[in-house]
Amino acid sequence: MEWSLLILAAIIIYFLATFLYQKKIIKGLTEEEFKAGYRKAQLIDVREPNEFEGGHILGARNIPLSQLRQRYKEIRPDKPVYLYCQSSARSGRAAQMLKKKGYQELYYLKGGFKKWTGKIKKGK
Image: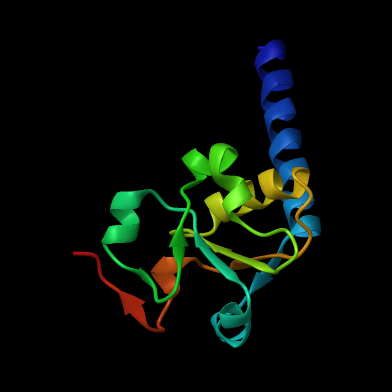
């Protein structure tokens, strides 16, 4: 019983530390703030290709989180990066990965694509 409590405490501490780190390195934007800046930035959808094909924000490029380690060089480090996923969780993980590679201006859409009410493009 004692070990399970220690393991549970360690897991909680890990997730809390990750959450606080993400809040420090990436700024969450409301849909209005996101719309105001994403045309001057690199708009990256980190969802999987099948999700992207089902509909995505007009002008977004699909670089899934699962491929980001291999494809991050497709994103310019000298321009702001606007990330979004379905709900916001993958955007945070993508930002952590990009931050380690030297990217500075990282933003994500609060609530993700499922809350987006702006223009979208459907796949084929």
